[in-house]
Amino acid sequence: MIGCRQYAPRAGADSRPKRQADRGVVTHLRVDTVGGRVRFALAVFNDSDHRIELDFPDGRTHDFAVEDGGGRPVWRWSAGRMFTQGMQNRLVEARDSVVFDEAWAPDAPAAYVGQYVVMAELRSENYPVRTTTRFALR
Image (cartoon, rainbow, N blue to C red):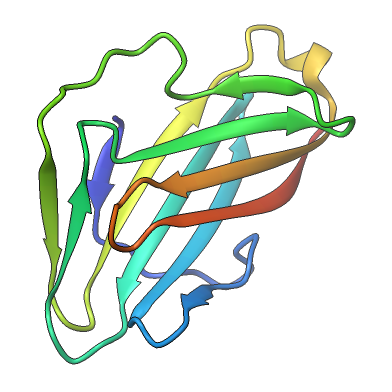
């Protein structure tokens, strides 16, 4: 994992925040394409007045997957990785956030010029999230 950090959305982010109805969780998926690398960030905001606990069944807390314009799989962050079997949790204070971010560096950037869709997944058992957004590589 590249990191898990505090996050404040910036103007011009690539997707609109998504709220889980009546649960106090708002997510935001951002894609940055700079210098042949693509960086994905899934921000999870606790929009409630109380602390929440994200419960995960194992060590894979999140995932990112990229498909090309035809819906064919191109890259998945978790592919080929091993994860712990133990359950874990993460506390998110009221009005606070946590970010799960990863990077993809295509092996031959010129071969990847085109339109893509990224799917980001928060694998929490009690606040599961799956969201997508489009991006382009030029």
